[in-house]
Image (cartoon, rainbow, N blue to C red; front, side, top):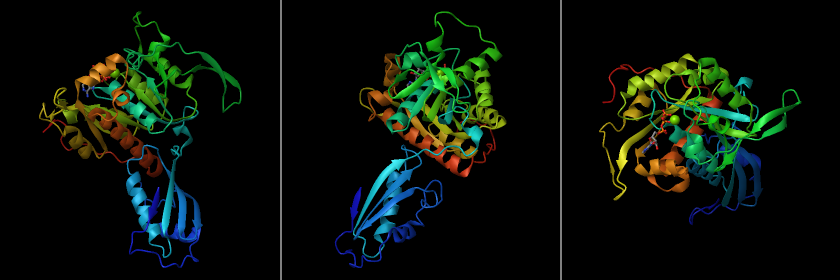
Length: 389
Ligand SMILES: Nc1ncnc2c1ncn2[C@@H]1O[C@H](COP(=O)(O)OP(=O)(O)OP(=O)(O)O)[C@@H](O)[C@H]1O
Ligand SMILES: [Mg+2]
């Protein structure tokens, strides 16, 4: 992106003193708006070049899905154009998702962040959020995967219209240097995928006991060849059951996205999920409010059918976590799911499509913030039993 000074703001012609150091000095007070630390200190300004009054540099974002790129661009531009003699600023963009600092934060080799999508109760749209979150992250340019940990009712094969038995491949274990056998993750819509639906005969009901659940989830997670992933989204079964508990115990999750609907007794349900993950020492990334408003399929008008819109935002504020966004109730989401095409893919410009994209940006931003500054201290709502107001 090239910026020039507007007329009347022409430089002084004193270009002799501009050096990469002058540029870095001018940029030293420009902070990442979310992380609150200077871009220079975070190593986000790279490859500064000066040619006469022309300055070029690279800004390396902490995620390709960065929601505040425009603000960063504006702040950098303003800072560099304030150097006497600078006529033109050329910013190149790149991204590199930071990895958790603790070694155990990368429990699956090659996978930087594991994000679980959970809820306090069933049927609130977890799987739909997980699928659209994953495809939106992938379409932003991130390397993303999706693990269907709902072993009781795997939904990914249907929602993405994919039924593939994973092939077995030999890969080198980075720890031991030995060849090990792994399942190659089937791919669709730019995502690496794994689901029990790929492995088991779906017509045969399986009676799962706690330890079996834990081992099935562990096996899918650790015995899949995910390659290099920035984000692995995990769709959890409803409630506070075995797969939720075992996943949080097997792997240190980067964090959990809680999905809720406004007609829930919002704070009670969300608090239950919050407590469980808090107990397991798992950070919360934030809350998504699903099916908050109704979008008329004929006229496109959005109406508040439940009268509780905003419950998710209030719950997030009271708990001190990020409100990640709101998805309207839209019948096309159901038909898209049934047709095996995520709404974000079928129509990214639709209202739900844009909502999913924005949620993906917010999740990615929260991961960057928590990775670079540590988990947020969570708060408990003052009165968890009051429900939506
Ligand atoms: N915003 C939405 N608008 C309309 N329908 C939706 C929306 N989100 C999800 N749905 C539909 O609601 C139903 C339940 O969604 P989904 O399967 O994602 O929920 P879940 O929380 O994963 O359920 P479970 O607890 O059974 O795993 C599906 O038919 C889905 O298509
Ligand atoms: Mg589900």
